[in-house]
Image 1 (cartoon, rainbow, N blue to C red):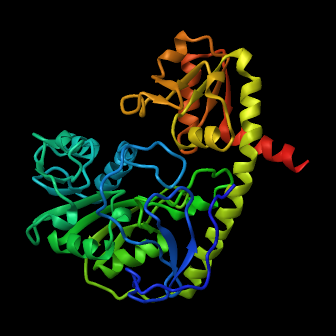
Image 2: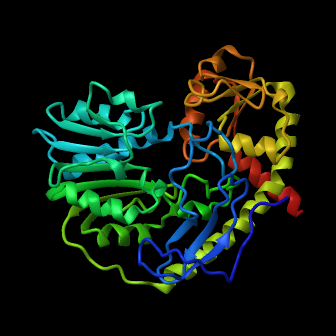
Image 3: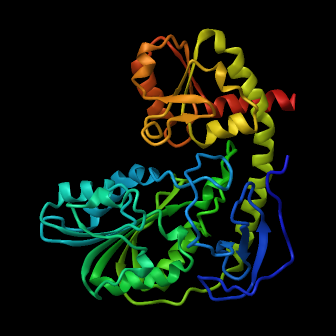
Length: 397
């Protein structure tokens, strides 16, 4: 089974978007890439980035896949609205007529929450995806374009909010510099991005380096890029959150980022660990699938129809017909079925005869378990991470 591999030695003519150096070397080929991307590491500053920087290709159909082709479902940003609002309330006065730019407004979750807290504000929402852009129509001044193509006035905004967008851009440093330009003096940047620290998770099975993400930031590399664009960081990411990097920064003066070979060494070690851990976990998925199948006479409801479930079916060869129910409250409105199973809403659990609920989630496992227990109080709750750990123990014996 090919799950990705290390690549050493070659260099590319492309330059690093952070330090401007040309010491990019290929280190990993993601599994299932449809864009033919290769992950590169800047040996000078440690920024991990994918080449080619194909950010304007034709949009592929939605894929709820565990491989590199995952994407285009467009529902994940809503999970980060609460954290962004908490950060904004901590650092900005929302009582007046604040002007805010929302970059990649998606389905409008943040815009709606922001206007509820600041009803006198003026919002400009930038969203290029015509499938979801109209979610902000009537609430904000809507610009249906990529942020790189939006012509915005200098010094117009008090706040720029950007959630899980910067990693998609071919040249994020340029866009951060433009955020600096459109902000008023002392204006606030709320920036959220995926955290490469997730590669260190002991239970990772999905391909983390997906085609649509061209940059893969650590807390240090993203901080350096923010500061290089002319911002002073006033709130660092939560160190306990290995999935996201939420920064708050104020418009200040530009600083030149220093190269740091230490960060390159750390990133190289992290990717090597990820490859080894994921290969071991994918091998264990067959045992996880077998344990769930043995529970089928009790009636198994599996909660989470996304990437972990796809891994279970594709790599663990799990037969979805063994399930009584497949639940996913966020995917149900967007994806009708997964691997031949209809996706149900959580309410269906209370009407089923499921005696076991398997929680297939990493970040929201505890919340899902609590909701499942309220809907099916007599059902046994099992966590994906526990099933995987038991499978690894059996394989090691």
